[in-house]
Amino acid sequence: MPGSESISGGEIEGAQSLKKRTIILSTIVLLGIGMIFTVLFPLRLVTTAVLFANAAPMVIPNLREWRGSSGSFMIDSASRIAVDPSYAAQLQETAQAFQNDLFAATGYSLPVASASSPGLGDFFLTLKNSDRGIGNEGYLLKVGDAVVISANTSTGVFYGTRTILQILLQDSAKTHIVRGTARDYPRYQERGFMLDVGRKFFSLKFLEDYVKFMAWYKMNDFHLHFNDNEIDGGKSPDWKHKYAAFRLDSPRFKGLAAKDGSYTQQDMRELQAIAKQYAVTITPEIDAPAHDLALTQYRPDLASKNDSKEFLDLGNPKTYTFLNTIWDEFLPWFDSTQVDIGADEYSPKDGDKYRQFINTYEALACSPNGMTC
Image (cartoon, rainbow, N blue to C red; front, side):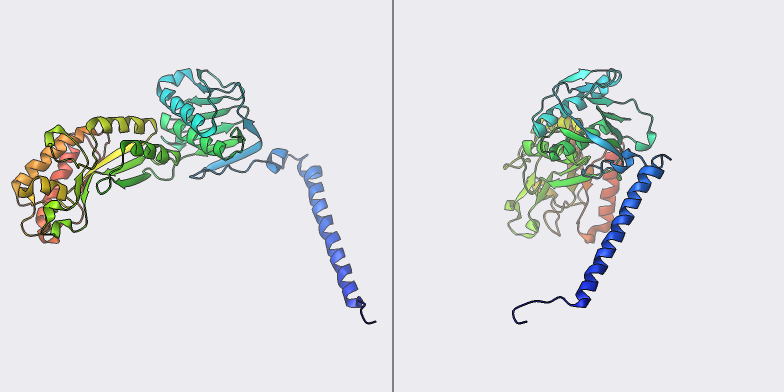
């Protein structure tokens, strides 16, 4: 009939077929659920803890191992940062950093207390741990009625607090942490970042903030490149006036430090004190024998005679005398067991002299201070 719709026999059969498939699928699902509760539960092959286990919390880097339970821990008015008194000396700085950063991230100010065991709602920090497989930077995290972080070193405990902070920051109330157990340890021994403060000056406050930023992601080596110059500045006839900077300021080398920004020994001491608290090593680099326009502008007699003026003249004995005094002055400013002598992008015309340079300063850096080479 015009203006009306009709349903064919094929459409009716299709609808009936779909209904049958839906009924069959529903029956299978119900049978599966019934099997779990009537067969597997009595045999203890499946438990509610497995069925409703918390997924691993999302942190950076990912937790290496996680076993979830159900429910969540919550910060309350009785919560504390409890430090195991047997390890108070090793963990006091870590507890203080955690207290400060917890307040910054969540607004909750928890007292630091001494306790042999955790109370309800506590964050308990301890070095009582027998798991040597997690190494010096790994930790065990147990989240139940309290949060327990245990490790072999204070660095491991510190990294456990970074995980806690990341989890809390994702919670809308900034109070909840899913219950479960983590066994976490780094994949790589060195996790570093290099900042070129030679070409661009960064304030001491910026460097201190960057230390904390790196620690947030469990990075442990902050490499500072202290001297450099504009690209090809040494090839210009006006090389003495091209931009170049040496960022360490000592009265022993008056006029060498860049006028647009530099760091004193006290600055580096302050930076390293914060870095130590946040499990970060400051690795210094004084680049030579290239990238040295700041040095050759300060001592023009040490500039290469036949190449770019940013190259030190390795045929001049005074070059070594000068660089020895540079390292003698600035090496003691740093606590790192590693230093970087640069040694990149020098002229290939002087290969033998360059190799002699490398051997000389490898020996200087290694022998007197017990540094890693």
